[in-house]
Image (cartoon, rainbow, N blue to C red; front, side, top):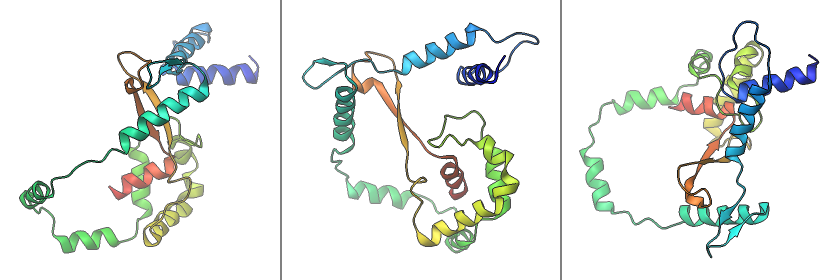
Length: 202
């Protein structure tokens, strides 16, 4: 098997979410069929616009979803501030605010970054830059101090890098009429370094 075919097989094998192969079994069209089925379910071939018309071009489909989610997330939400304050007053204080503040203000340690990386799951959804947790584990001895220093510079500055504050939104099909945009659930995919940072901040 040449390198290109091996690479294609490995890619299809990983994306099909099949965890193992029987000993001695050769890669076959089965894996490519599995990947093809998964990919076809995620392709949006048509969608219904506000007028009830079915559109099929990429530009029209993008326009429909852009309008749908822009309207959904830009709606004004009327908050009852009295109820909000009553709820906050009922919350019990379980952490000494002084101790908690001191703990939050201290620098992130290398050991904490290692612990966050070890606890992260493998085979997660692909990131924008295609650098998964496995890469960070494999080469952590090379990037360990630099990564920790980057994290410790973020909080004093109060700003993330462009890649850390950028997300790729993927639409996941749900049950029901897939020509209705409300039956596609948006999922934001962030880069691994950002996800590690959120686990440290949590």
